[in-house]
Image (cartoon, rainbow, N blue to C red; front, side, top):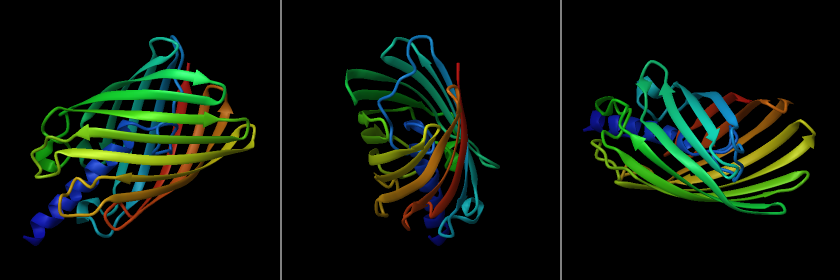
Length: 244
């Protein structure tokens, strides 16, 4: 029974990783934003994290995860996105395919909706995927001023699975960013997620970090994410974003 409990906890931790990758704004944010690429614009995000969680199974207590997200501006207000997260020495997780539509923009305020499907590409027998196709949707509100930015995000997704987890998952988060210098923004982000493990409490996480715009088409970022006992305890985040 103890081994089974540890396995379920580890699988839940991996799904929690997936939740942070499948719909997010500028890395290392957990909160989505209402920004889009614009017609014909491409963006590639390569990011990773080094996790430390003494409560997880031994194979995941110190894990390295990687995110690979490609976005394309189909129109001035509609982006398409493909996202494939990966856990080192474990394998790829489920592939997410989706889009974001910014349906309202006036002054500093922008509103958007997102949708995604999750394909069972991860090996569910190893806790790397749900074993079934799933879908999700969310709503985003962003206010972007000259120095300050504020973002709020809420989403829901199905979680049909073979892991004895909850069959639906919700996410709520909010973020604030402050431009210290023209290329440098500091950020604070906090998030609440349904725990996939039906026997455990909600996942609560907070991110502190920065984004440095080296050029208008190249960003570097880093941050630290802290979680409660149910979530991954601590992770070091780092990434690079390229646009063309």
